[in-house]
Length: 383
Image 1 (cartoon, helix red, strand yellow):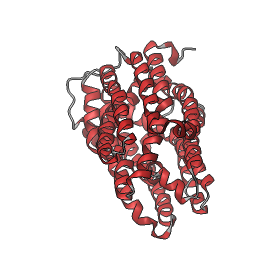
Image 2: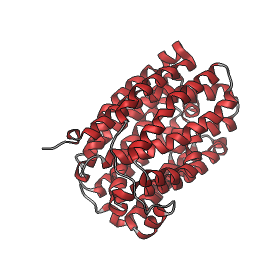
Image 3: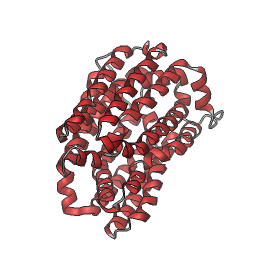
Image 4: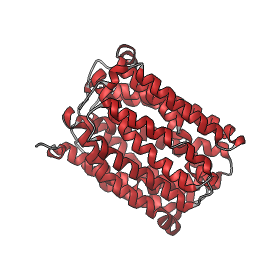
């Protein structure tokens, strides 16, 4: 039986993704932790925490247009080439306590990352035939997530040894990984693409509309967990160790979830699992125990792997691979508008602890279920 690994382009992408994903926790956790500790302002930290979200609102349509209009392989190489320089700059700025200037660099990094990430997410499912999509995603997770788990768990040790200079290790690894995406052949290069292509498909295809609207409210529900993780660790009574454990659980959930979903052919069943697990992640947060946060972070990615398959099947069917970047760009814009709103109101919800945030999260997951039921075509696809 053929495998995604039979395709040379997929193998090269896989190696690059494994290397870059392995050092991502070291750079991302270092940036978030040091900015949280040194800005001394929840408002300023909220800018850093939500930088990717804010940038995606404007950058996603541009990234989607670029990914459908031009060669996706070239876009990947050019964007990934900038990251070693950006991480080196951030390391030096943090080492010399120039955190306000660092905020600007964080936003530049977020914009380029959005173009690279969106192009990469399209590439991994278009480098192989449609029937191999869930298997290709699982293999990618199995290769990259264990290494992510190791670097996440070793972050406290490495951070205490190197501090901000840990970003230089990440930068070196990213430079080593670059040759694997040089000259990569990925689909793209359609002439009849505009910034409004994704919106037109959204308006005309029910399965695309349901998938996008559902994921908007889904991601709003737990945005505070993903983007305020250092704050949540503190609120739950944890330390740097639990910050590392929470991120490790996040990676572990992705591995187990992506494996289980390869055994599930029905989109409807995958969605039921997604919704049930998402509901379960909120109540434990009221226990004021850092282990509750560890479970919640695991549950997010475990459930998301099931939602991801439903989402990809819907978007690929409605948009075809030719315009997949455009609809994902629209999805990112709408999703991150929702995330931004959720993140900016979260600090104001803390007056009564986490009760309001937890209650709102549960309501939003319920709304997601209603959206999926009223767009039934997205639940009818099987692999």
